[in-house]
Length: 342
Image (tube, rainbow, N blue to C red):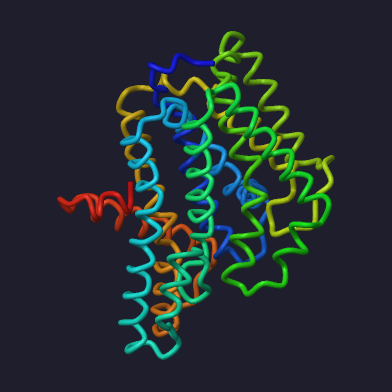
């Protein structure tokens, strides 16, 4: 286990991976055309965005749970709740105003409540189910490590992961939630599917797995890279019937891909390049949270102007617009906007 008093250093490989996976989220939702061979790498990585982000959410905050402090715990909980509430209000207000201009938009007051509590209103921003699950898992981890010392706490997380696998592969998870209404079905169903990613991410940080791999860095990079390529091509772990993330082959693939990114020696790049990478990475939260509303307005505008655009190019425009808007919001001198995008 790493020294609890030592903060994890900024890792440029992880920063690059976060930026890529944020773009993959946009591709997941709005890339609808046939995939040319030259863009195939972007296509095969789309399903990894959510697993990677859940893994990193607990990998990068492991010290927050282990070093339990009431103020830090409150700060962390607020850090994950704030975007859920803030963006629900922004989406609802934005669409409510826009429906007076665009007749295609139909939003109701009930959508705001569903969005706040489940993050999965089909009329607002269904992508925020991830944030809902993250909030609940964060609260569970804070509770565990408040009342149990680290070794017992991590044992409890392993038990949680085991139970999650049993519930998935027995079909219980699917039977419990598949018949529920849309706003509840996926947040509840995917909660169980996200537990293993959180557990493995936390464990990798707790046992300092990737730092230990640096002792034989070149060998580790080659092995992690080869394993990632192999798992991208071949799936040898059967999927459970579920809600999109019960393909536990992704659990292994996520581990090796994140390890590969962590081990790449990007810290040796020129400082100017590292500063650019840091700058590009800091708004991934904002882009993730706003990409749907940007996409919907762009599609409405292009439709009104009778402009046809390739969906991959549209995804690039969505990402750039999301970055630009996040940058502007962060420059507003108030925490209200800063914490929504960074």
